[in-house]
Image (cartoon, rainbow, N blue to C red; front, side, top):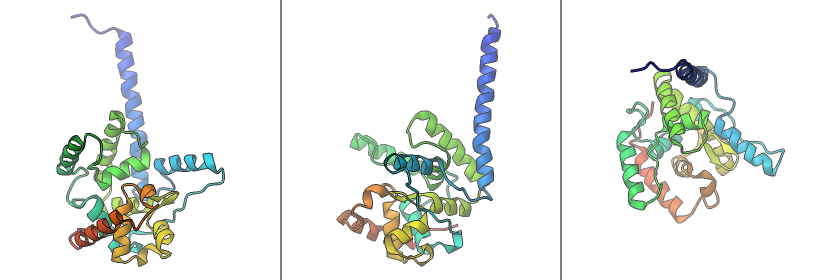
Length: 231
């Protein structure tokens, strides 16, 4: 067998170096954000760019609050609604992913994602919302780093502070003030459940937050909250 030409070896080596540098850039941010709160995220930047196409002076609403200053009801509601195995899994809920695949196949379209809180955070922090194979692979790698380098408390704290909760609304504090006129620390159980129900599609659900679907789903999450385990 003839040896591979030098140009092919050099090309593969250069590609490998580029991949390592790119992944190292992601890893550097994950390490930095272990101790330093993110000033913004990739997803927030995209939303801000979209908003400024319509209004050049548009700004996002977000105010960082420490983990202990977020209502325990909201923490329980979000875990119950988004990732009930959050404390136990290592970044991926394989059973949930399988159920989502089966549900999507049955419906003939994507109606469920199966992503954990860790996966959602990985995507929001550093990636685009596209659903390409490459983006999903990057999400998986970043999720592993988050789980290895952060504890569950930090993952949930950052998630609750950066997740989208409406048009231009990000994080628990901005959401609590936008919908209820109170601080995130003051949220009651039903208010927290209603916010958690919005998370899959907040910009859609904010148009009618007291619809029959929202009311029913809120009551369902309220019933699950007592069993939600927190870090």
